[in-house]
Image (cartoon, rainbow, N blue to C red; front, side):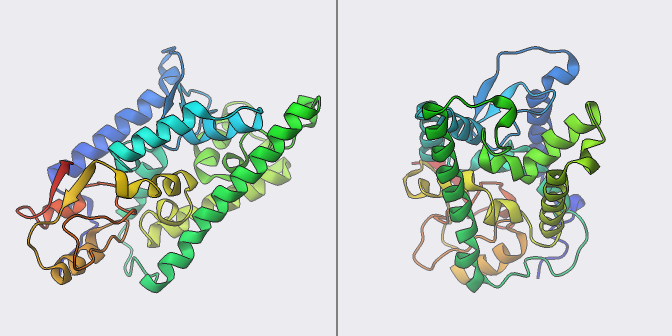
Length: 292
């Protein structure tokens, strides 16, 4: 039995390095806070594009906004495909700001984590699929409206530019709350949609405390898009000769994505794997991360 697998003091050096990189990425994404101006670039992970100090565009925001403006999201789709087939969901663990928040919540000393039965996993995965379908349907609808009608920007629906991002807890945390604090704090209690956005954020963060990376596992539509390319990705974790039953018992305790290995796998082929490296500490002579 592994003791305190989620303790911050119980992590290998690679995890401190990962968290340092997450902090540096977060600072880079908000470089305007330090009076640094830069041409926005599209980053291949979930990022709240319109935060007050942002210097980057999240690829899923770019995907949605391209469609709602009546264009095919060729740049966003290209970035998602290239990232998906090369490094997969690596940046979910090493760069995504909301992933970093979930990692910090994971260190809280809460007992009985990973309380969701594994037979619920596939059913809950449908939430990602439904949210992606909602995003696509709404974006295409608004894109068609943009092409066929002259829309007054003032009369636009709050969902018009990026349907998923409006209610995304990541956007609420990194965009809506900072803008409100920076510009108009009263909107947090005067606008009806604010109560919905804040409620979703609080509920999501609460679930992330007891279910590590809950948002990544069951909510993130971009994560689901990367799931679709998982079997084609070049970056894989080789499992070595360790008994799969032994590995799965340990993974159940240490893996924030609840990855499990099937008995005939030579590699971790689960689309849930984000390459965080937490499992390497417990299988130092077995697991290895390689390009194929």
